[in-house]
Each structure stands twice: as structure tokens, then as C-alpha cells.
Image (cartoon, rainbow, N blue to C red):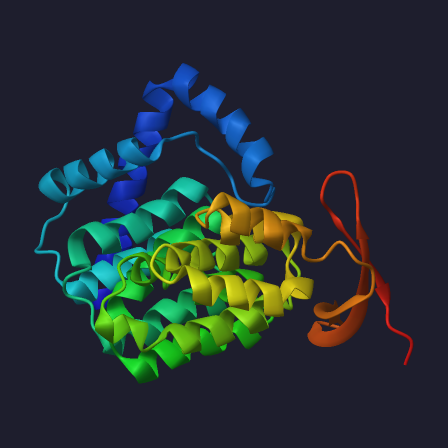
Length: 296
């Protein structure tokens, strides 16, 4: 019964969304073409609807279309239905709905529900990942065991889940209070293991978290970057040190100019992550890392 109500409720939002698209063809067509080039995940459709418009449509849907109260159980069902659809906007709307109407009701017991959205393949691309990651960060805030659970996602073979293991703590990094400071070692260990992926969106997620922490603990981040320099892409490194003093940024950028810095990366082999040790030989003109295998 509950599932059928969620299906009906999510379908009513999808109808409202698609009507908006058909009523605004010039606007949505232009944004759709831009999104195809920007998001680059071709098997998910783009409808061309901006985030503010999605939120407005959700408010209208809740006020006019729902035939029952939107409790947390129904909201979770609607979220799951929408994130299983084949358009960015429906998936994003499912997460926005959870954030707008249910975030204060969510508790630690809902963490498995959020994780399963990754495991079932519904969360793809950085916009969906970052939206749900910030919800997760609020759910686990201050709970050491839950934080460790999210941190353990860095061993997943799902790169978006690995990114979420860092991005979930971005707000906690920037708004450090005494309780959160106790979790910095856990966050840094997670970041170190995630950086081993050497994948762009994972690197940027790690850099984002390190940047936020650096605004209150710059010495800790300088030391971390120097110690694990070999794991950073140039882009990830620049994210991580962006808020450090200019002289310190320059020192860290120059730290790895010598050849022979050894690091490790993870590569997918037959669907499983395999760690490979590499030597960072030099950086290309565009800041890319050129790696070669370490002889065994």
C-alpha cells in the first residue's frame, strides 16, 4: 500500500515537471544542450530545468497535488521512485524533496536507505552525489560510528560513493566546533585512501574537504599535503591549498617538482579495485600527472 502511494505521488510530480518542460521549450532546449556537454553521462536524459525551478515545482506539487500528508516514510518512497527515473531532473528532484521536506526528520537509522541509493546505481554524477552527500553529513554529524561508516565508503568500487565519503563532511570541515575537531584524523585518513583512486571527481571532492578544513587548521592541511603529495592530481592539489597563505601555496606547488616521488593509484581490473604503485615522473603542460609503473 505504502509503495503504491509513493509511486502515485512521484508520478504526479513527474507529470508536473514534464508539463513545465513542454510549456517552456526555448528555455529548456538551450539548457538541455549545455547539460549534455557538461554532465557527460549520456544514458541519463536531460530535460533542461534549473535547480530553482525544480524546487519551485516541488513546492507546488506538495501544495496542490498530494492527497495525503507527506510523512517521512512516504517521502523516502517518493525519493526512491524519483531517483530511479531516467532524467537528471527527476533524480535531483527526489533528493531535493528529501532535503526540503524531510531533512529535519532524518536520523541515523536512515543512513542505510541513503547508502542503498548509491548501491542500486541511482546516484551518478557530481550534482546528485554532492546533494545527497550534504544530507548524509547532517545525518551523521557528531556520531563517531556513523562517521566511520561513511568514511569506509572510500573502499567502494563506486567512484561516486567514494566522492561522497569526503563531500559528506565538507560542511563539518568549514564549521569546525570542538566535537567535529575530534574527527579530523578520521576525515584525513579517509581522504588519503580516497586520493589513491586518482580519479578527477574523487580528487576534487577530497580537495574540497581539505580546503574547508584548512580555513581553521591550516598547519594540519599543509603537513598532510606535503606528506601525501604523490597522491594528488594538480587540480586536486590546487583545490586543497586554495585558502592557504600565498607563500605556503607556492611552496606546496613546488614541493613535488623533483622526479621520483612514489605514490599509489587504484585501477579497476575485472571489476575490482587493484592497487598499483607508481612513480610520479613529471607534470605535463596542462598540469596532468604522468605516471609510470614501479618495477616489481
